[in-house]
Structures are given as structure tokens and as C-alpha cells.
Image (cartoon, rainbow, N blue to C red; front, side, top):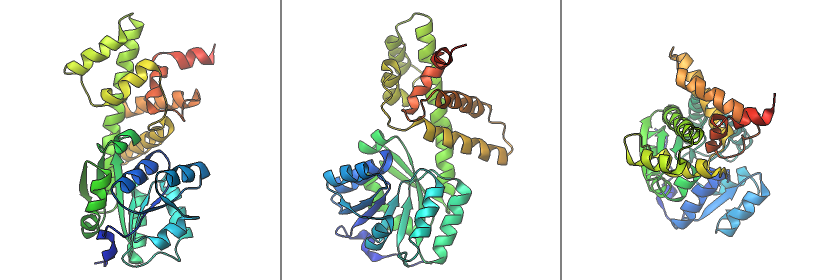
Length: 303
């Protein structure tokens, strides 16, 4: 069993956050509002400045964060960036340190990362988050955590600051797998909502009333609460970027193929997202897929 740094439980012990984008920035803010001293780093100077304005302490490097903190959150685009951070910070990693990785990475890479760090005495938790940056902000997100059970218990106070509920899913890699399972359903709910709104508009119905009726009846899903108005108003200010979800859907289909499952709905969803990305919508909120279902991306592309 890997010994876990006792400082994790102390409220005066600094917590690190590497990656201060949409999700990481909100995680860092919740930790600060929870009374923790937070040391953060991002390659983007504007994100670092924003982090400093809401009370965080800025580090000049990812290694600096890992050197200063016994417990460090990672919130990076993919497992490749996670591996790069770990590789460049090998000299500061230490026995008993805990890394909580909220990145939605490839489960096999995540499991391998956990094995590699465990050999160095570092506890690695793949703590994927179900929920957008807005849901992290309001405390309604869910954490699905794979890895060492004692490490999960030691970090429960921190997880309670960033998520409404946290679940220990098993060994390293299972948090990443569970995130992809939930994202498969979440993404398809969002696509179904977009298609319904596009159909209501196409039939000349009051789309706002259609959304209200769907929310009142058995068609309801929680995705309507966040994404319905964004679709109606074509407000695609990003809470979770479309290209990031396309990356997840590709992983979902890869895992489905490994399990010998057909996954026809996710395959159709990937095609919709790829058309949206090709139309230049990748950096927008994932609700922007409604533009494909409205037929607007084909119209913009021309004959």
C-alpha cells in the first residue's frame, strides 16, 4: 500500500491545479471558495491572470505546482498532455503525493499512468467529472473516481468541494471508462433535444413552447435545463466545447468496438459532430450541434 501524505486532510495545506481552462478554472474557484489555498498553472497567461484575480496563487510551471502541493488536480485536454506534465515533473514527484486527474483521457493510457505513478509511490486517481463547467460552478457535477481506495478516502473532503457526489468506481482507468459511458448517454440526450427543437422550428411551431412541453412531460431530461435555451437562442458561448465532446465520442466508439458492440447511435452522433466541427463550430458550446440539425451547416457550405 502506498503511504498517503497526511497533509492532504489539513485545510491549511495548499492544493494544486494544473490546467485552468473551462473545467479547471471552475474547479480551482470552488476550492478557493471552500477555503483552500490553491496554487495553479496554465500555459495560457490570460487564464493564469483570471485565476489570480479570484484568489489563487500563480506558479510559473506545472513542476512548481507539484513541488508545492501534496495533492494536485490535473484538468488537461487529453491524456497526452497529462503524460507530458508527468514526464517533465518527474524530479519533483514524491512518495505519498496524490494526483487527481479530471481529464477525460483514454482509459488504457489512464490505467498505464496510474501503474507508472504507483511504482514511484505516487497515488493517481482518475477523477472524471460528469457535468459542464457551469454545473461545476454551481456544485451539481458528479465525480467518478478510479484508483486507490485509500487515496479516494483521503481526498473525499476535496472531492466534496468540487462535486455534488463522488463515486469510487474501482481501479485506475475505471473513472475514465465510466465518464465515457455517461457521456455517451448525455451526448445522445443533447442530440435528441437538438433534433426535436429543429423539428419544431421546421414545422412552424413555437419552439420555446415545444421545449416547455418536453420539460413538463416524459420526454424530459436534465440536459434541457442547460442546453434548451442555448439552442433556442443560438447562444453558443462555451460551457463545454463541441470538439472536446467529439473527442469523447471517438473514444466511446473505440471502446465499443473493443467490446464488439455496434454503437449505431454514437456513430450517427459522431457524424453530426464532425459536420459541426468542419463548419467551424468546434470551439463553441456543444449545444451548437443544433446548427447541423437545422440544416444550416450545409446551407452555409453552399452547393
